[in-house]
Image 1 (tube, one colour):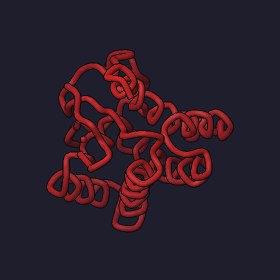
Image 2 (image 1 turned 45 degrees about the horizontal axis):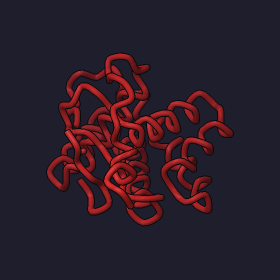
Image 3 (image 1 turned 90 degrees about the vertical axis):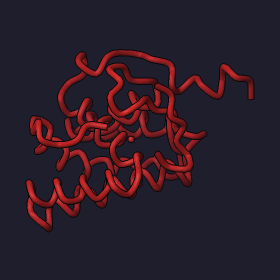
Image 4 (image 1 turned 30 degrees about the vertical axis):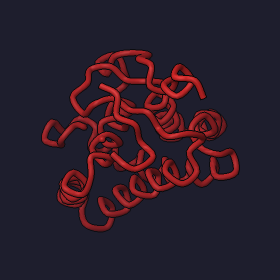
Length: 159
């Protein structure tokens, strides 16, 4: 791989402020989760306290499974921007669009977006997890109290 192809998924493609709320939230939660155990615990507590143990747990567990699928079946290491970065990259865009599409009921588009970042053999599973996560994220999208940020072994931090 050349230097350019290894960074392709991290090239800035837009600004967080330009995204629909569900997509901006999906990126923020992904970034937070990938920051590690302290952030994961904070998200788990926040989801459960705002949505209840059952529904909040289901949403955050789906986010965990999404990150596991990205780590184990990513087409390449996921590139992401810093927690506080105002822009977002191509990989983050594909993730957010997958979540946004499935929440809007467009499974076919969600599967196409999933196929951009994970192996096509797990894209259906990825979309199912994105739906469970997206429902919870949509409920929390306008909550300013959540931390907004994301590091796993298959994630490269850019900005």
